[in-house]
Image 1 (cartoon, helix red, strand yellow):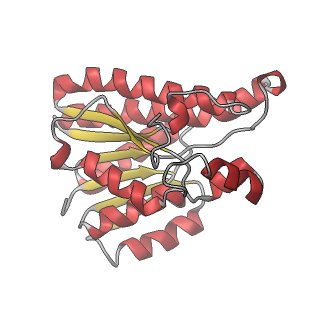
Image 2 (cartoon, rainbow, N blue to C red):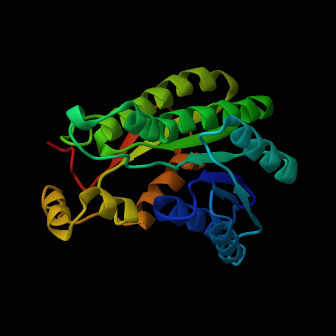
Length: 248
């Protein structure tokens, strides 16, 4: 991966940050995106201690002009785009279906679905012109099953898996792979917000056969594998990384 150009959306915290660090340690040029310029600038300083170069691009993935510029700036600066990790996401507003509104729907789907769609659209535009590339989307264990009080998040991650599979079928014609990982609970601020209390978090983790949450670094290793040449015959797949949560 030495010298590869890797773009990671939502790269300032959690799984995205861990993936950025992991790619940088492998010698990749890492471009991270997000909405907090101060945090992005600080992260770039750290990434440059590992990799050949790094860059922060301020972008809101819900805005197509931002996404188009994000891709164009990356290619203009580094000449190509080898890997894109579409990690930016939100847990939305937990609660029963009867409590959801057009506003809570938009707040969840604009980031988790529209954001991924726009990123894939412009990433594939660049990768098709190159004739190579690799996209890794971030789904969830809830992308293939239901969960009470999480209807919009669940629905949005089902949509991400559909986009992944459809995009893979289209992109295969020009030599680009598209996959997703589906994490179970991971030790991130999102998990803490989603569970809301230590008791609820403990209850959720009790249902994990390995009896713990995943670490962002463990998810990063799965992303690296799917992006690597070791996974060169894998496309259109959703890879579960969840401590056995979906084994039964």
